[in-house]
Amino acid sequence: MIVEIERDPKGLGRENGEVATLVEALLHERASAEIYDDFSGTALEGIVNKIVIDKSDKKIVPSYHYYTLNTDGFGAEFIESDSTCLNAAYVFTLPCKEFDGIWENLHFDSEIKNNLLDYLMKALLFAERGVDHNVISFNKLVLLHGPPGTGKTSLCKGVAQKLAIRWTPRFRTGHFIEINAHSLFSKFFSESGKLVLKMFEKIEEIASDEAALVFILIDEVESLAHSRAAAAAGSEPSDAIRVVNAVLTQLDRLKMLPNALILTTSNVETSIDGAFVDRADLCVYIGHPSPPAISKILASCAKELIKRNLLEDKAFAESSEFANIWTEICRLSVGVSGRSLRKLPLLAFCEGHNPMPMALFLDALFKLVKSKTAEKKLSQTHHMFQSISLV
Image 1 (spheres, rainbow, N blue to C red):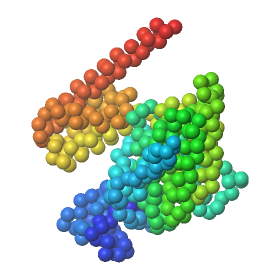
Image 2: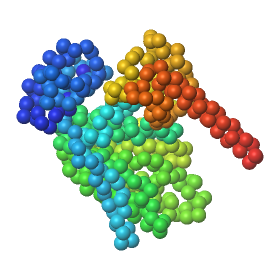
Image 3: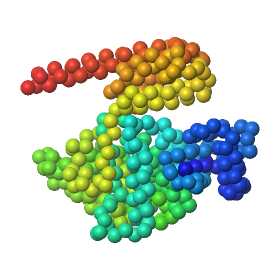
């Protein structure tokens, strides 16, 4: 079992060992749960803000990981181009407030989260032990691909936060570098390869601190690693190919840094250069949620509204008086992205008052889902007729 303990900055005077004893006592007293965030009236009040329990780890002796959240916000990395400064990346210091709770609120149909976390943990272990890249090939590069809004970017942020917590104190701090791929394209396209080189030089500079764990996120990676075969047919093939070559060269350099991990996402994996895909140790498809995952997503939304006293505190899912409408909502939501699902509760809340009765909320949610399903069918029919007319 793994226990992650977010320390309250005001209570850092208490030793971690003492806190562990108090946490053990609390866990023994309370019913089993994955997350604890209310310590009012307990010995942990003012000492701990949150406890997250991971029972997927089968070790008999629990391992404790202590951390405080960085609340300084994000910074920016600039590079010069034609006497102007381009915002090439955003940098977060981990673990940070912005990424807090992302991991726990991601729901998928399989072991995607744990498999990704396990891979990255082992990749870091291989790097730390100095495993020879010439004997065992590993690039510490992940590619998540699938439709928009399915949680690819959030998964990258969530897993980075987890690793930053669990690799404490081996790494004193963590840096999450979110590359602004579009800013690396100069109006003088031939300059783009040089901008890519400058950006990766900045990353290497940050990763030169061996006490820092560094994550590099390239969202919509196809914009930087577009297929060179397709680029050859474009108007400026040599320039497009130069950008891809620069990216591949820099990735080969980064893999030698033991404290750097590369996370990438794409909505159109088929347009990515084959050499880039081949470098990915892990290539994972993230699709739309199934009814069980949809149920978890919408349930987390309802619980948040109940917690904030915006929704009637009443059982709403399976084995409740609302079981039938809840099941129907989840069934009709198949094909809707997780991002779109999380937008529905606010729209449903607009139909009622504060606090909103559960029956009214679910009825509004049901109508919204039916409307979205009808819109999707209409859109599919429109695209089908467009395709026919082009033939």
